[in-house]
Image (cartoon, rainbow, N blue to C red; front, side, top):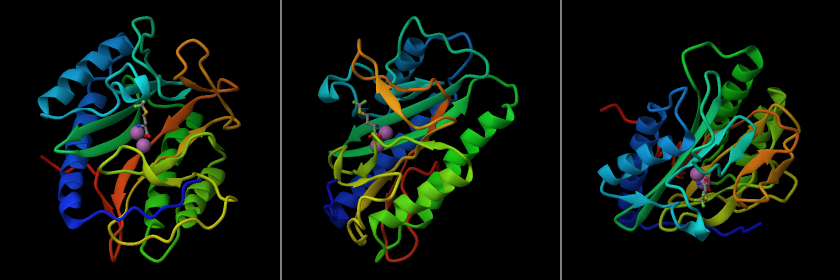
Length: 258
Ligand code: MF3
Ligand code: CO
Ligand code: CO
């Protein structure tokens, strides 16, 4: 567990706030393009155009060799799904869109999960989607100066438990802003210690990855990226970037009205 307190300067925060806003807007434009019948490769190409139109560039493309513009994780894929011409999105699929954009030397990183098509979700899918969003929002509410990283972790964990959702433990949230992954790590579970004290100027990505099953995952042996639930259960992923302040946290990737 990396426990650092990475406090950003006011000048950096101006640039990080802008990158996060741009990324949130791109995330929602991309999510609005999800349609049954399209492939995840099509969606990744559209995402590439949307990202280019912002004047920024994908923070994921080329990161540790990652080959996509964004991550598109369908159904039992939890995170790091690469757009593929052989994966066709179907009505009712659970589609997670994770977007990272670098602009003016700062980075935004945010994800949301949507249901493809127009039909209503079955009860268990609704529990997954709403439970994951609630876990994120409860984690954010716990992120106040003077508290610790583990207070965020506990809020996410308790909300996941309440909704009877499996917690993915092999991947965690993180500091963010100038590099995509900065200290500290922000796990979605407790039991690893108290963690760093939160202070104003820290920027954190809180990102619950939850499933309808156990939370155990495996990595695709061929592409070495795609993370799937081990039991094949549906999964969801929600991620916001927040700024720790003297009062309640500022959600940097909240979509502002335009
Ligand atoms: N966006 C992911 C995160 O939330 C990281 C993606 S890694 C990449 O931390 F290689 F796919 F870009
Ligand atoms: Co992300
Ligand atoms: Co992240």
